[in-house]
Image 1 (tube, rainbow, N blue to C red):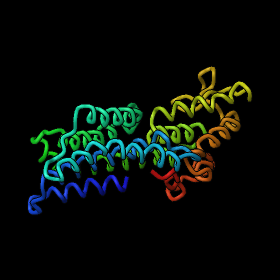
Image 2 (image 1 turned 30 degrees about the vertical axis):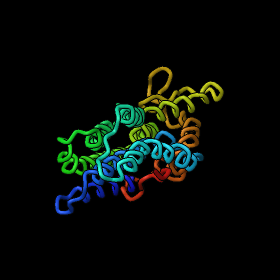
Image 3 (image 1 turned 45 degrees about the vertical axis):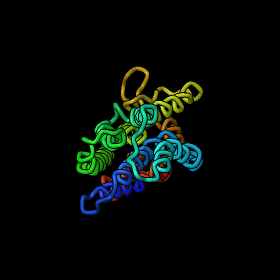
Length: 271
């Protein structure tokens, strides 16, 4: 994400009128920023330990190379004298990656983040398709959209931490952590985690199942803390592939005092 944001800033600087840089340079910078903004979204799809390091090198990096290849070919072909203009297949490739990666956040509390973030990507992409009218909106609004997306994401995370501070039972804390996980990792990972944890239920003879709203009893009633002892262990074990186990055990303990300093942000795999 840091590299992606720096690439957006670089494009904004190179597009400043006093620099008088060629359209070839500004269009290349816009498309590079477009590609780099996709990398955090694609990283989410493989954000599980162990394996995240391999995902970076064998999925994210090749994606950047493949998507950048048409722009690199055009730059060499014109020797940097003409702006890049993506073909329809190259443009669709970017859109497909965007839909597949950002789409997993839709329906979660990160829906607003995904929509604003995707708007910035599409705005940058428009300037590389030969649409000259998109040049000024890209320079003016793409950085603003990115700042807005980061602000919304920060507000969402603070809201999840607030719910954790006010939760007084294991059931409520599990629900709050589950909502935070869904917000950070999207619907696809949330569903996979639910299915993985629920595989333990028949063997361990649980009276609860994990749903989108946390653990619920089979009869629909709210489970007690005693009923959640075994499911809680499975919950922590599965989520430890995504966040720090010590942090998870700390925030899921209903006996923790309601102290904001005790609820630090979770340690998650780097993206």
